[in-house]
Length: 465
Length: 91
Figure 1 (tube, rainbow over the protein chains, first blue to last red):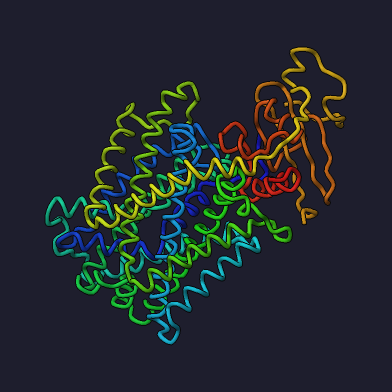
Figure 2 (figure 1 turned 90 degrees about the horizontal axis):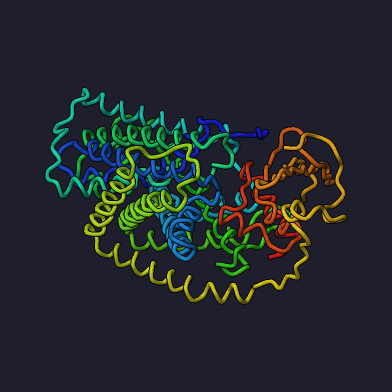
C-alpha cells in the first residue's frame, strides 16, 4: 500500500545525524581526549562507534518487529511490561531535557565568546523561547532545508578538522598511546555521548516504505559521526593545548580560531548554531510529544494533553518541556557543571542500549514467530555482548563521578514511585465512564452473518484490499 | 482549523477482508468502501479494535501504544489525526 509521502534514506540519515550532531558533543570529544595520553582520542571514538553499531543492530531488529512512532517505549513495554517501560522512558526523557539544558549553556558560551556584550543568560532565554514559540505555532523546518543544514554541518566540521590536520602535516604525536586501559575505557564510555540520539530515527518507522531504510540510516549515521568526531578530535589535540581544550566549554571555537582565525570563528559559530538548533528543535518536539502521548494514556495529568485549537499543537506539554529545559540551563549556567550532564547522558544512553539489547533477547522468545526484516546476526551474540559491554561502560562512567550514579538512582526511585503509586490514582481519577456503544465487530458478523444497520452506509467503489 | 487538511485515510482490518477510505477535502468528510487511490495515512488493526475505536468505546491511544494499532504516514499527519480523535472522543 504505497503512501503519497515517504522518507528517503538521505532524509533518514539527515534526521538521525541532525539529532546526534550537537554543540555539546564537541565538549564530550574534548573530554574523551582528556582521558587519554597523546593524540589517541580518535581510537576511543572509533571503538565507541563500533560498539554503537552493535546497539544499532539491536534497535534495527526491534524496529523491524515493532515499527511504531512509540519507538523505545513500545519495545520496552513488549519486553518488560508497561510499568518498567514507563519508568525508563520518563527517566530517559527527563535526562534528555537536562542535555538540552547543557546544550543551550554551551551554545550560549559560544555566542558570548563571539559577541561578549550579550550575556549567556540572554542567549539561553532567546534561543529556548524562540524554539518553544516555533513548536507552539507548529512551525517545522522543511525536510530539504534540514537535510542541507545537517550535511552542511558535517562537511564544515570535516573541513575544519582536515585543515587543522593539514597544519600539522597530518602528523599526530602519539596516535596509539592511550596511556592505560582504565583511561581508555572511560574515554570509550564518554565517547558514547557523541552518538546520543542516532536511534531517535526509529519513530520514523511509519514514514518509510520498509524498515530496512531505518536500519541502514542508523548504521550510516554512526559511521559518519564516528569519522567526523575522530578527525575533529585528532585535529584538536594536535593544534590546541591540552590545558586549553580540557577546561573550556567551547573547544570547537578554540580549534576553528586556531586554524582559520576570524573566519574560523564565524564559521564555527554558524556550525554551532545549526547543531544546537537541530538538537533543540528535535528535543523539544520529541519530548513534548512524548509528554502529550503519556498524558493521553493518563500516565501524566491530563492537562499535558491539552492542544491549541488554533495551531493544533500540545501547548501545555511544550511549555512544560520549555520550563524544565530552561531551569536545567540556568542551573548549569550558575553551577558550571556541564560535564556532569555530559557524563550522566552518556551513562543513561548506555543503560538504554543495555535495555534495548535485553529487549531483543526477550522478544526473540516472546515474539519468535513475528517476521523480522532485520535480525542481528550470530544468534544472541550481538545482543548479549551489547548488554555486557554497555553495562561495563555505564559503570565506568559512574566511577568517573559517583555523583552521576547517585543522581540517576535518585531519579529512578522517584520516577519508579510515581509510576507505581501516582499513575494508578491518575488513571482511576480520570477514568472515563463510557457506555459501550459497540454492537458487533465485523469479525463477529462474519461468524453469525451480517446484521442490518451495523455498518454505516458507505459509498461503493474501489478495490477491496 | 482542519479545513485545509485534505487527506486520504485508508482503514484496514488485518484479521478480515475489510478496507474503508476516509477522504477529507475542504473540511468535508466522505467515507468509501474499499481502497481509493494512494492514502496519506493507513490505519491498520484487528476488526475488534477498529470497531471499538470508531464507536468511541476506546480511544486510539492505548492500542497504538501497545502496538495493536498501527498507523503508516507522516508524523505530522499521525499527530493531527490523534488531535482530531481527542477532540471527538475527549480524554
